[in-house]
Amino acid sequence: MSGHSFNRVAPPAVAPPGRLGFGTAPLGDIFHEAKEHVAENTLRAAWEGGVRFFDTAPWYGHGLSEHRLGTFLRSVDRPDVFLSTKVGRIYIPAERGEDARVQWAGGLNFRVCYDYTADGFAKSVAQSQMRLGTSSIDALVIHDLDRGYHGADFDRHFNNLIDSGFKYLKSLKTEGRICWIGMGINTLEDFTFMADAMDLDFFLVAMPYTLMDQRSLPGPMAKCLDKGTRLIIGAPYASGLLANPENPDALYNYSPASDEDRAKALALRDIAEAHDVSLAAAALQFPLLHPAVQSVIPGAVTPVQARQNCANARKEIPSEMWLEMKAAGLISPDAPTGT
Image 1 (cartoon, one colour):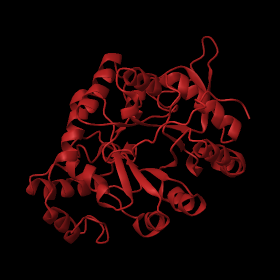
Image 2 (cartoon, rainbow, N blue to C red):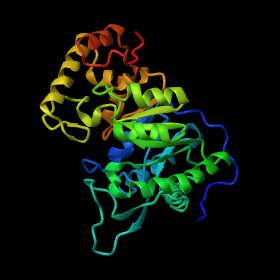
Image 3 (cartoon, rainbow, N blue to C red):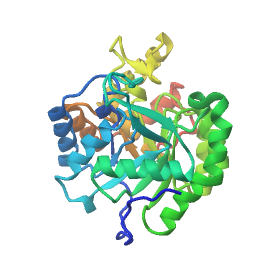
Image 4 (cartoon, one colour):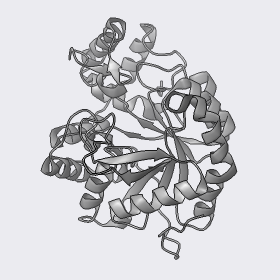
């Protein structure tokens, strides 16, 4: 196993992540290139709104999101922050003249390699520490180990995780070098499988539980509740549709929204607005009503969006709104809503 640069002294006890976090994927130039000063001001706006939980990953802009977040974190008191990043990918420089960037609108020019072994995780952590400019990371998240990304290679990567990588993460936690171990989930199929297969501190769930879709309730969500596994909800706005369903270019599940999905989002919006609640506020707060959910981590690409996320989290929502959504068949009758 290759070495790593974690401090040898166990860090002090760290408070768990707050109810509202900040997902920094958009600051990796996922859909649009962000200017450096705008990214910094966006993080500052979230901080001033009370956010102390920041999630990032090497994958977001091939290191760019971690660089930007690390620059910001050096301007605040690090002990006040709960910081999570991810493992499963390592990066090597692209050849001179080669553009190795894939998927993102911008980002840094590095070539990605998947590795779920202990050695790969150690390299990933060391790279993240350098980009973030900190030797202290509170949570490590196993990233994108799903069939959609890996296809025929899934079984090999999963076996590497079980036989090697996961043992390494557990050793880091036992030694006090990290506080939590998590796994990122993007589909109901993978959530169902991993909720049975893995014993983790949390799942970071992007899409399988939103105001638009609660199909995970009777299966993996119930399993997590039984096992005491926390949930952190990424993409509470369902990749955009629940933030602005009138936008003709709005995405749902990272693809153009269908007419059916848009109609459902508009119906949810109408009920929310009848109770003086924005759809975005309803979407942000809905997952937090589930007893297994620890946090939601919406993204933002401007200070205005970051401040709006904070306002959405504080908005008082009447219980009658949730009851009306259930009566209209727009959310599951079994969804926890505190009513």
